[in-house]
Image (cartoon, rainbow, N blue to C red; front, side, top):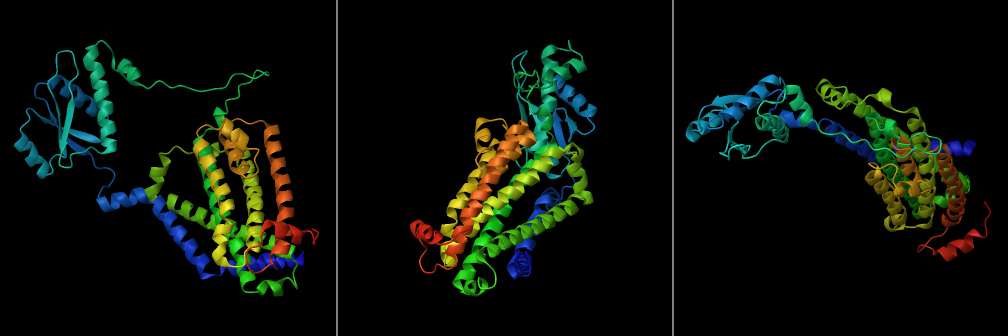
Length: 426
């Protein structure tokens, strides 16, 4: 046990002190910082303070009734995002001069239409395009004006608003034998969504980063012949599991650093208001989602890390490592893509099947627990399969590691590894 602790500590501190680790961590922290502050940076470089209203010239012309209704709608909306400036007629020279003088940003006019039909609206500006936010605001207002124009005032403002309100459709499953609904709808909160997606990304990133570090560490020790000295004082199995735990602690350290960077940036004054509009309440996070997420994260890491260590022990040159770990990388990518593309339908058949496959269950079962409906026996069965797989692949990887660390030259075939494994007992 003392030797295992020594290997863990040596692996951890030896990797943390390297320039590559420090530089990589700093670069990722800077990327996270830039990503969180993208909205603020856009406003900073474009000169938009976030409170500027777009000034739109509204041409009354022959469609004075529609223009008046739109002006009344804008006046009733304190945060419409645009301000209307009245123009009786469409004088293109005068309007173009006002745009050049920045009195207005563009102008809106309505084409002639047959009686009883709503005319087409045309927005003219220097850029020749509409900002997405402004377009949505104008479309919402024009939709209400269109309803009022067609109904000719026969509906009240409340009735018009109710008529334009989108119809909501809630999905649920049929009742089971016990009479209880199995919709899982209560779990689909903003906090659960954010936590699940963060865990999926972190699981994939840390598995790939630490897994490749484990494999490259073993390969570099073999290529430099240091392995021959190490095994005289520490058994190969102690080395293998010491490296796995040490790299796991490095991954946890990086997650803690990135989490602190995100928290600091979110709490900045210019970001606090923006993120508060997302309506994400941390109190809505289901504790069972947090617990199962951590359990599947740790177990999934242990499964993949043992495979990376076994593959790394079979490679004698670092140049061949990328090709050797490619199958594990593809499996990890498959798990990541299944999770991200199926998160919108957590009760789908593909997720149910993937939750019982040990290589995909950490991500798939996390989505089902966090966003869908899953019985306790399903979670227990998935955990049992994952634990058995960790034991089997851990035992197999340990045998491969013990024989592979002293096999030099070209990468051995599976037949050669199997014969060498028969000489050792784990």
